[in-house]
Amino acid sequence: SSHFGTMPHEGLRGHGGGKGTRLRRRKVGSSTTGPARSSARPPAASLTEELTPPARRQRACRQRASPKPEKRRRRSGRKPSWEALEAMLAEVVEGIGADAAGEACEGDAPASSAVGTTAPAIGSLDLVVDDGDVHDVPDGTDQLTGKSERIPWCTTFLAALDAPQRALLEQMMARGLRWSTHYSGVGFFEVALHDLAAAFGKQADVVVSSATEINPRCRQMLQAHVGPCRPHCLFRDLTRRISAHAKTHMREVLAHFRQELQQKTISCMDRRKATKIKEEIVEEFMGALDAVMLQAPLTSTDYCYNCQQPCEVSQHMTGKLNPEEITGNAAGSTCTPWSAFGKRMNHFSTIMICFCAWIAERCRVQEDIIFHECTAKHPSEKLFSRYLAKDYILSARVVCPGQFGFPARRARQMMVAVHRRLGWRSTPLCKSPADLLGKPIKTSVLDYFIATEAQLQAHIVREAAEHRSNPVVIRDLLTPCQEKILRGYEEWLRNQGPCTGPFLFNVTQNCQFMGGGLAHLPCLLRKSVMWAHDLQRYMLGQEAMCFMSDRNGIESSPWKEEVVQRMPEVELRSMAGNGMHVPSVGAMLIWALLSCSAVDSERD
Image (cartoon, rainbow, N blue to C red; front, side, top):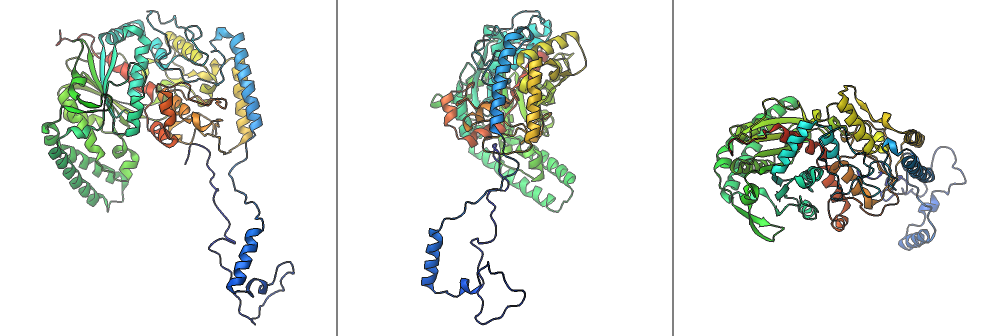
């Protein structure tokens, strides 16, 4: 179904008078039984007495000439009152403006035509966290320029760290990060690194040396990136670097195990048993590829779409400008073979060869830090231990955006591998990445719809400093004006009931991604701003719903706007729907850097 309101009954027509309905001929002279027909209905003879072709043509001409009654579409739900919605929009904008002017001390942001937390303009923030006191946190009203900008997620995370942790992270960022990415979609890893580097300003040295992406649309989006984290070189397919002989052998092995899987599970009615059989066969498949993966030669050059010529691949991954730089690789493998859907369908496709090729390249290149993101059921720990446990220290975590206070429930497995030459702290700084904030945060979609980033940040820092254990209820942060707006919007939703329409958007369409909201949270949108909403949701970690009826373009984006506007809407939605949650990825990167030893003993 589309992101816009669907009409479940649209297109259904009555069976009478349709194309497949035929009029029965009555034999002349035949008698009928039963009660007499009403005089209002024409006798059957008037419908069937003239059956010659000329008479039929004349009858058809008369029917075409006569005006047909307008067909009414059946729609589900009630038609929303747009007048009430527009009136509420004006009241909300006026109330936010008055609240920001009268109660600026409470941390409200300036008035904007978009209500709620609007996506910040990437690259335009000049907010540097360089003080050692975590209590002196800006409220977000003086340091930011522009009426619709907000403090990004990384500023909130960094403010929640204590002074030693922030000093250690600053030291790691100052050494320099040189990263390469594989299958990052439209650039989720790149945006996370960009936000993290922007928080430290000139003290951070972050370079994205290369990116490998097989999807042509995603490659266009990577080329359209703006900022220092735009990939220097852009390659196409990782499997193209494998020799033709090794690739053919991999496909033959894959076909053999796919046939074996089908034979063993075709008569198995128990889903759990079938899943276990598949896991065993996958492990055998990976074992059969050991010799090919570790011994197959990899080409050293590949065609670069940025340079328009063949470029050196390994040089971009390991070539360091200074010996203190930390090299890393981040990848987001396609999760279909290991997802719940893939296991039900016994999906055993060539996508697994891409993962095998990526693992083989990591064994050759040996970066300092390896980061992998995939579905929560991905056997990362088992597969990584098979090939990288000798040289790397491994840690797998299942991370959910809800752990960081974002009202989303898309759990993903984040695998971090740190090379033994860097070392791993004997006493972890935190048990999990969510402990970076020090406490759980309870939020809902409607709370984010009203609350501003400044209020969230100030309250989180205050609670973390006091080491309170009770959850943060964002609704308690609202000013009286914001509380009034929130209650009015909830009442309007209850009165509307379930409704659909061409300009309505239902955020609970993908219910597994959302949590804590009402059953229906509509938003007045145009097609031109649909991508802006997905950008807020996935790229910037903001689940806010904004009234954007007066917007005609994409205001804040880490890509060139003209490139995004040329993209078909269906492809933009598909790229965003399968994306990563940038704050979760960024939190894992912070956690990995803090867990590494600050001193590289072997290099020194």
